[in-house]
Length: 64
Image 1: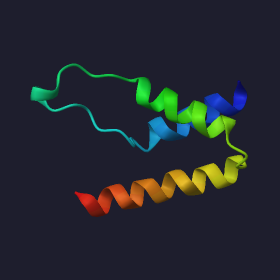
Image 2 (image 1 turned 60 degrees about the horizontal axis):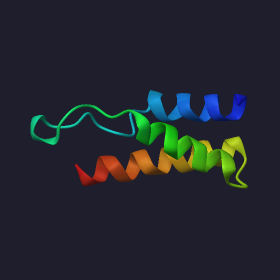
Image 3 (image 1 turned 180 degrees about the horizontal axis):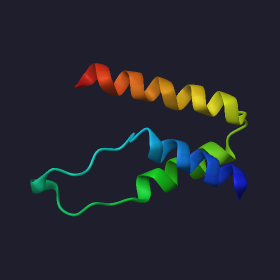
Image 4 (image 1 turned 90 degrees about the vertical axis):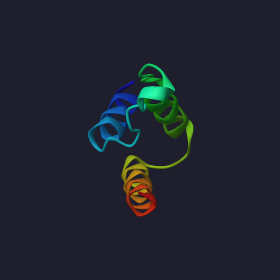
């Protein structure tokens, strides 16, 4: 459970998922939970997971 909490906190801190636009409906927080669960279940170390999350943030900033 501690690994899940650490990973979820990391995802939330970097704001990987944006808030929905007005036409998209209400905010849905579950994507952070689902991603954290998938990463906990993966064979990656916590350090490797943080590197992967940082990579997602870099890709996200390029697409804006």
